Structures are given as C-alpha cells and as structure tokens.
Amino acid sequence: MTAPLALIAGLMALFLAGGIWVGFALMSVGIISLETFKSMRVERFLAGDVWGSATALELVTLPLFILMGEILFHTRLSENLFGGLAPFVRRLPGRLLHVNILGCTLFAAVSGSSAATTATVGRITLTELKGRNYSHGLAIGSLAGAGTMGFLIPPSIPLIVYGVLAEISILDLFIAGIVPGLLLAVMFMLYVGAAALVSPGAAAAAQPSTSWADKGRALTRLLPTVALIGLVIGSMYGGFASVTEAAAVGVLGAAILAALEGQLTFGMARKALLGTVKTCSMIGLIITGALFLSKAMARLSIPTDVAAAIEALSLDPITLILLLMLFYLVLGCFLDGLSTIVMTLPVTLPLVVAAGFDPVWFGIFLIVTVEMAQITPPIGFNLFVIKGLTGDGIGRIARAAAPFCLIMVALVLMLIAMPGIATWLPGSMR
Amino acid sequence: MRAILRLLDLVCAFGAAIAALACLSLAVMLIVEVITTSFMAYSQPWAVEYSSYLLAPVLFAGAGWTLGRGGHIRVAVLTQFLPVRGRWLADLLASVFGFGVSLFVALALVEYTARSYEVGSQSTYPTRTPIWMPQAVLTFGWAVLVLGLTARILRLLTGRAAEDAPDTPDLAATAEPDARNAKAKA
Image 1: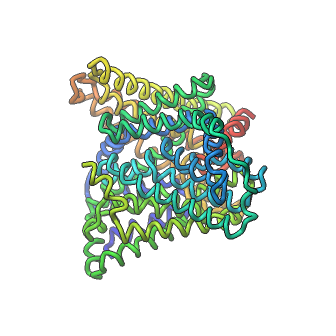
Image 2: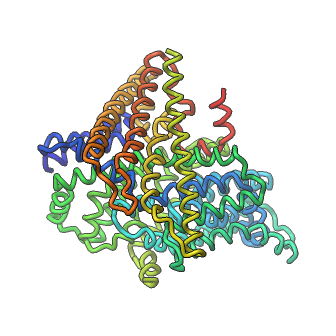
Image 3: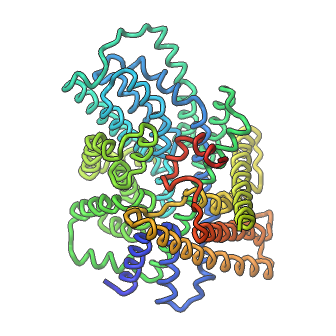
C-alpha cells in the first residue's frame, strides 16, 4: 500500500468512526492528503472545485426530482394508490400484501428516494393490512423490500449521483434500472404469493370479487399517478425531453395534482420546499466532498496504484465482482448507501471498468447492493422509516425483511450471470 | 448567550429561506423553459446558465439550517455506544472539526470570489454575468454553515441540545412532518 493511500484510508476510518459528518470527512481527507504530498495552493484548487460542483449542470435535476417527491408526499397519492390497487389483487394468493409491492413500484417511478417510497406507501398500507389481520411480518417485510425499489426504478437520486461521479449518461442509467426494478417487483410478488400459500393464516380470507364498475372506479384513482409517470418517464424515454426538462415537467405535474386535490397551499409549498432544501443540503455536502476527494486521489494517482495492485492478483472478473459485493455489504453495515457509493467509487469504478464491466451495469449492481444495506441492521434507513411508522423494534423489522433481502441477493447474482438484464434496454434504445 | 444563539439561528433560517426561494425560482424557470421551447419556439437565453447559479444556493444556503435539524449524514454506529459524557465530547470534537473544515472552505471561497471581482471575470455565456455575483452567493452559503457550526459548538458548551430533531435519517423525519413541525415550534 502506498503512503498516500494508507493515509487516506486511515484518516477516513478515524474521522468516520469519530462521528464527523461524511461530507466534512471526505473533504478534509482530500485537503490533508494534498497538503501532505503535493506542493500546491490547495485552497485555490478546493475553491474552484467546490464552485464547479455547486454549479454542475447534471445536478440540476436533483432538487427538481426531490421537490416533485416532496409535493407528492403531501397529496392523497398514498390513499389513491391503495384504493386503486386493492380491487385488483383480491384474488391473488397474498391478496392486499401485493399492494405494498405494486404501490412501491408505482411510487418509485415518481420518486427518487427509497425512504420516501417506503414512507408514502407504508403509512396507508400498514394500517389497512393490520386492520384486516394480515401477517404483520409479511406486511412490514414486503414494505421494507419493495421500498428499496425507490432507488432502482427511475427517477433515482443515487443514480443521478453515480452518473455525475462516473461521468456517464444519467438517462442511460435511468433506463437500465427499469428491467431489474420490475424483475425485483415480480420476484417479491412471487415470494409473497408463495408465503401466503404455505401459511394460509398470513393473508386475510378471500373476499368476493369486486364488480367491474368498482374496478373502473379504482382505475380512475390511479389515473393521476399513471399520467404523471407517463409524462415524466415517457417524455424522457421518448426522447422528447432531457432529464432536466422531464424533472421540471414532473414538478409541474405534481403541483397540478396537488392543486386538483386542493392541497396546494402556501403552508404545503413551504414544507415541500424546506424538505427539498434539507435533502439537497445533505446531498450537496456529501457530493462536493466526494468530488473533491476523488480529484485529490487522482492527483495522487491512487486509483491507478490500486488497479495495478489488484491486477497483480490476477483475479478473474467474476471473483472481483463477488469480492466487491462482499466489500459493499460489509461497508453497508457502517455507512448509508449514498456515502458508500461516493466514497468508494473513485477507486472501484476504474477497477471494474478495467476488468471489462460496463459502467452503466456497475451502477445498477451498486444500487441493488447498497439497497440491501438499506434493509439490514445496524444502519438501514428503510428500517428506521418503518420503525417511525409502526413503532416495531429494528430487529423485528430486519427479521421480517430478511427473506426480501435474500431475494435481492438473488437479483445481484442474476445481474452478474446475465448482465443483459441491466444493459439490454439502454443498449437497444441507442 | 441566548441572544447570540437566536441571532445565529436566525441567520441559518434566513439561509434556508434563500435556498427555498432559489429552489422555487429554479423550478419555475425550468418549467417556463420547457413550455416556451415546446409551444412557442422561444428559449430564455439565460436558462441553462442561471439554473447552475441557482443550484449553488439550493445545495448550500440551507446547509447551516439543515445542520440544526440533524439533516447531514454522519456515522453514529460507534459513538452511540459511548457514555453520555463521551458522546458529548465526540460531538463537540466533530463540531469543532466541521467548523475548521467549513471555515477553510469559506475563506478559500472568499478569496476565490474576491479574485473574480478584481480580475472582472465574466461568464462565458451571452449574458456576460460578472462571475463574482453567483460566487458570492455560494460563499454566503458556506459562511452560514460556519455560523451554524458556531451555534452548535456554543450549544454543546452551554449544555443545550445541539439539534431540534433527533439524529434520525433524513426522510424518517419527513415521514411525520407534523410531528417535526410541532417540535420545531415548541
């Protein structure tokens, strides 16, 4: 290990363990290593870099997608998702449990955040499911698992951050997330169905099928959400709008939805804007720190050194990627997903690309891997969100989420075995 | 001490208001842009450039305010096992460290902005905006973050709670916006 790398890794571990904010830790490690090993005007380099990151055009989509999600959070979207989906899953094994999964899938397509997806869908479904005597474990487990699709199905905040750091097309990443996201939803539904068949007590008794008139009424409740998804994702994939324009259209659509429900008040706008500011500040500090550290590491030629060291081990690509998966799962026990991605990417991305992997594929692989960390203790944001909704202990929620976590492991293995799951759709649209 | 803390909180809240307004302006400007380019064959010549200038306050003007709400991510896995006194000390050290880093960045930005002003740098876009203006807004954001950390250190030293909301993940707090607001008012 070279001296700069040892210093960076050592300081990082020390600062993070000491509870220093991740953004400050990243930035200070960059400053200290440059001051130590390079004779340069670090403050000048830093100021220019902070200015560049704070005005990076690729990041403009970030506040827009976050604002869109915040506005939708204050509408009756979650009630409408439940009311709209419930009549269609009554006869499936597992019944209303599927609303968790389908609701999260739909909401994930208008929200870039897993925590927001979990919270929005869960605040209605969990009470409804409890009132109807569904298995509590399956209810919170399927919510925890399905909520993670918020990061995978576009728009997705971590995919935007990944795209900026990896300097690849955010649109390609968004498209690449669709098939794995839908695949995950199908696997979750199959599991819920199977679990309900194995233990019939898990789901409530069969209910009479609803009439077609009821089904039609239910569909109209879903219409606004579906229209919004069509508007945002459709305009992006159809090539009518850039990602930024699609995000702006999404904000407008969300505001119109809220206005139609009579929810677009000054107080709500204030809450949504401040919520956006809070999330953007958090991401801004981390990504600025990460971009600076990655430039500092490049100046100290750390990525090439690490790549050379790994190359000397002559691992085959599959072993490398399995080791990385293990590495990220361990890291996920200590760090949240976003920090994990930004902190490691300057080193792992060149490694993976040198081993012949597609950076778009790696983005999807990384998202699913850190997503698993979102529902495993001790740091699992989605677990905290569900704890906030139900008051269950973290251990209880994590146990309920474990089968869904295993399904995600299966998805990662499938992604490794068949990279086309992620790369086929963006490739075919080029 | 109370007056000082109030003043610092006020500055942080002002920064958050700037960030919120910047976010609103950004959204409105880009929505207008999409509509006019699609239907009226007109494009605001400043849209791209100003969206990047507005991004800077959206990302940083509210950073000090976010700090007071536990919105910035940190690792609590290890420090949570410390006894109360140790946790307090760790928090104080982390806050002083953060203060040092943000002061370094803020001073670097002051110098950077001042140089742009002296040289008279203009943007490369047709508007020829003097570049020190948006840079000053970014510098303001980092200065507010320094003040937010100052308030945090003062709170810790005088035995006050450092944050309004508990140190939970960001959107978990959003899950109960009303509870959070009630706490903020109390």
